[in-house]
Amino acid sequence: MNVPISSSPLTRDGGIPTTPGACFQEPAVQENGPRKASGEGFFSPITGGPQNFPEQQRQNFYSLRSAGTKRVLGRSHLWSCCVLTRDGVNSICIVVILLLVVLVFMLGVLPRGEIYSYVVVSLLATAALICLVMSVTVDPGILLPLPPDPTRQPETVLVNGKEVLRKVCPSCHIVRPPRSSHCRFCDYCVEEFDHHCGVLGSCVAKRTFRFFGGFFVFTALLILFIGIRSLVALAKPDPHLNTGQGRWEMAAAIISLVASGLAGCIVLPLAFYYVYLACMNYTQKESVQISPGFCEPNHDYHRGYWRNFFSRYFGPLGTSRITAENADFYV
Image (cartoon, rainbow, N blue to C red; front, top):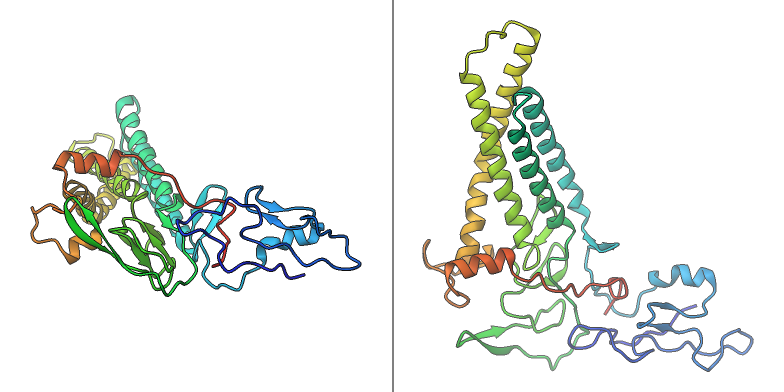
């Protein structure tokens, strides 16, 4: 049975209407059906599920679309509290490569009694992996779409005493906050948009910038430690070089040195770049489009280099607008 749905499932400010039945109208009463005209059998956005529906309809309810074609979560999917994209599985390859290099280094290069080195490598690898997982699973700052409204116009707001134009997104039909953009890969607008990472398949934006940049910073420190220690191990004379254990340690040191060198060519510049972006308070998109010079901060949002850095990496994360109740809405 088709459930009539109103044309405005979301409020103008991106939230869910607080009036029960404001999103979904009550189905028409059938003469011989079990449904009553008293309000039974409609979906409540407050309680989060269909009331008094048969089990089959209850299971299939969230697969029903409204007349709209714009999905709140775009091409992403909500699993528990994680926002996942189809290409997010690419991060598994990065995790496997990182763990293999760390294991080879710890088993073949580090001396058995050097506890502090094991602790340092373990902490850096764990921090890098946590940042990687958070970059792929955390809501980057998705802005909820609205139904089309021809009267909706761009707005001008003051940011640090300077007028900034808030444009209307032609796809999400919202007046975007400053520094926000529409991601054509994920199909939703993102707050403080940095870029879409094709390797991880996710957006880097306001709520994930710190994790994405943190992954490069911790990985850079890790590969520097691995590379230097591997180089020291190769330079030190080994009286057991002709034994099986000696050859394994030599091979492990070479593998660790080559892997850290190759990774360093990519990771070290990116780690420096994302520290630079944080200090200057630029997004990657802004640094390409409007940056006047390497040492020039983003004057529209500049609050001092240290304050910029700490606000980007350690400031409040903010609350996600995506919930289990609105993730599959269409407008």
